[in-house]
Image (cartoon, rainbow, N blue to C red):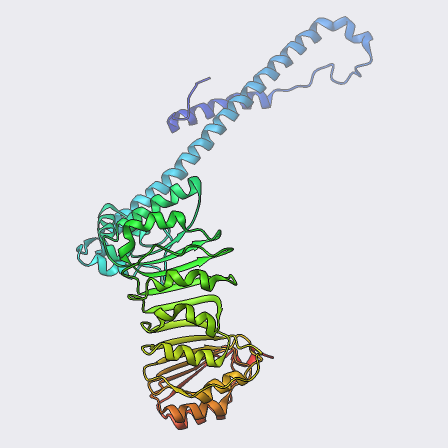
Length: 434
């Protein structure tokens, strides 16, 4: 029988298969009936006289059996080769399709775009979320995998590499991740950086060491830590304008205050999450408040809100998480803030609405343009109307969001006070407290 390997041409395989089929046809057509087939095998009287002819038949059957086994083996070999050939053809189909698509793409105007146009497109390929993971499945790293020209354009665009999420790790994991982080940051080429740092253990030692060469580029920083309060960052971040800190830890405020205070000269936006501030805790950051234009904070009393507004004369945007406590009725002195333009209030302790009403009664915001409310069980309608009249503000948008219920009549009264007002209502807000 003809021998061949997996690279044998198709004609050789077909020739061998034809030979096997012809030989197999001879075997399949052989007549296995003999004069002795009808005798029971227990009747030895007749068989003993003709034992020689029976021996010849047995020998013939053995030869037929050997030939059959040989053909089965040969046929299995051919079938294996055919299966291997099928696999090669399938793989070749994929390569042909890939090649065809590649050459079709060369006809696209995209490949003829000048290098000056590609950066304008690449900027719009970036993920919409604020910080980015270094993954090859998303831009900007994905853009470096398309072709050599795209890689050169993408790696020479510092704006693509200015946002990054970093997570603390240890040992070999950190060595591998640190290489990716550093390669990413090197491509920023001195541009301002917006970074997000995350640590499950409360330590940021490795990240701090990695970021040391880029310390004066960091303009925006978000820190999320668990379990314990870390030493937040280096002594000075001279370019830092925006800082967000999330720490779920009771004694976090005294621990983080020194690090935040060191950034007071450049810092303009401060978001503090996971911590609840009272009048005492606000004092830890007395040197910071006067410079801020944007604040997000959780506060436990209306008078602490007013006090913070006094400390922030340049504030234009204020997000209050009102965690008002049962500490008795406290006087809230009237106060007018002349620069605040955007106010967001959510009342985490939804049952304590009297304190929220007293806050509206005391506050005047003559420059307010945007007001958002979330999670307020009992809406202080009358107090809000009085607040709008007293403030005489150019309010453009009243966003009544999730967890706030108002009536059509109430919203109409707001528009009557400020005819140009747009009232936005979350369609799910009515069902939140049912």
